[in-house]
Image (cartoon, rainbow over all chains, first blue to last red; front, side, top):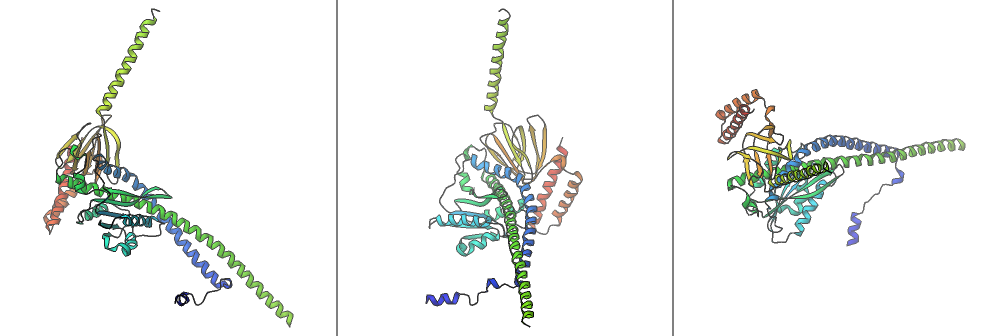
Length: 289
Length: 167
């Protein structure tokens, strides 16, 4: 039974690699150099986008830090059990190394560790996260946002996302945003940022110290803080994505270059072999007459 | 010997004075500075910089924040935000909305959705924008659009007021 199945799967005809004709090699050479052209221009584009993203990240960093300062000072507790809301910050575009898959991997690890009784919901920013998670964890996906990554993220995008999350109706006890922190052109780190529900903020240890806080004020305050945090995470993610795409495309161009060199060598050798063979045929033909 | 004595006394005076000044420095540090971080998504104006006073326009009215303010949170409304720097200069910004937080460590975080120095505002653009927004209020078909236009008008009015108030 098993043998039969193997036989079905095995290829019927295997091309003989040693007998590649001149034509085959030249077709392959052309396609590889076309690919190299594409990866080179993609690298150029992402280098320009990266320069802009990095410039934008500079003001976004202190902004994000300032948004986190309140939660640190108020000592809002982050519990490690209970219903969990996970926000994944990725984008629609691939060909950028492991930026998106490292986010998804981190989320999968968290999901696998979660005990069966606890409810977890996913909010996915960007099609890449959805594509990778919907098969296995489709039932957990609460909402997805697409059309991310073509243009640099703006505060409006972030507040739209934050608003949707605030109004999603899922009552979470703990929340985390998974995003990549940009470190340098060649490195980024997948990190989580805690998000706090309104009830967690009102119950915070140092909340009593703050003067004249009412529900309405706290509500609009945390809405804006949350949007700021999402904005910061999106900026970091966008910069890591562009830098990683730049590195990936640089590597791809380099590999294509190596391949072109090897193929050119084989092409010339084969051409020489063909000429020699033809000469031999002519000479031996003449000798036979 | 007789000449040396006054000098040595002077010495002790100097050291006492030095101790005094260090004590007053200590006291000032204990009293705490106001550490300001003020940023909008596109621009950063202050990062952990110590300032004398900040006047913040909030939904509950304008609030002046001095060092050692009680911990406090507030939401900004469109208006003029003034920063009095250590050197004594007063810098004014227009902010649209956002949040302000005073933490127990006497640090002040102001996050604005949009913030610009007042001298970068264009009076004619504000006037024409206000006229357009007022027109929107009367012509808006739905209540939601009307409310949005109303907010726009309020913001433009605040801008105009800020331009009048600046000095």
